[in-house]
Image (cartoon, rainbow, N blue to C red; front, side, top):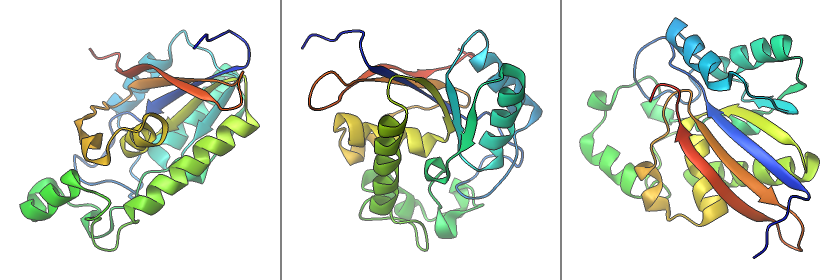
Length: 203
C-alpha cells in the first residue's frame, strides 16, 4: 500500500507523569501530579508542537494540559471519553491487597474477569473505540496531543491493530511516555500505522 502525505492525522498519546499518593490501582481516583510528574511531562513535550490538545478530565492529565495550553497557546479541550477505566473494588488498593488469583485472571482475560463494581472492560473498549472514531472524524489532518492514561493507550492496540486482548498487559507504557499513531485517509477505509510506542524522556 502506497502511503502519501495527503490527509494524514498524527495522534500523540501522552501518558500522565508520576502522581502523588504512591503506587496503587488508580482509575477514577483523582490524584494530582507529583513534582516529578510535572518534570517528566515538561520534558516529554519539549520542542514539540501540536494543532490541538485533548485531555482526560482527571487532574493528573488536566492540570498539565491546561498549563501547556497557556504556555504554548494551543487550542485545548477536555474529553471524558479518554479517562482511565474505573477499577471498582480495586480502586485505591495496591496489588498486595488484592487476591492474587483475581489479579491473574484479570491480566489473562480482562473481558471475562473485570474487577467487581468496575467499568466493564468491553464497555471501556467500546468507549475508547468511539472516542477514536470521533477524533478522526472531527480533526482529520491535524497533529493532536491526547493526554491520557496507560489503560487507554493499551486499549487502542486491539481496536486499531487487532492485538489479542490477552496480550494487552505485555505493552509497557511508562509515566510521561509518548505513543504515536498516524491515520492515512486517502482511501475508502482509514489506514492506521503505529509510529512508536512508549518513548520516554527518562530512558
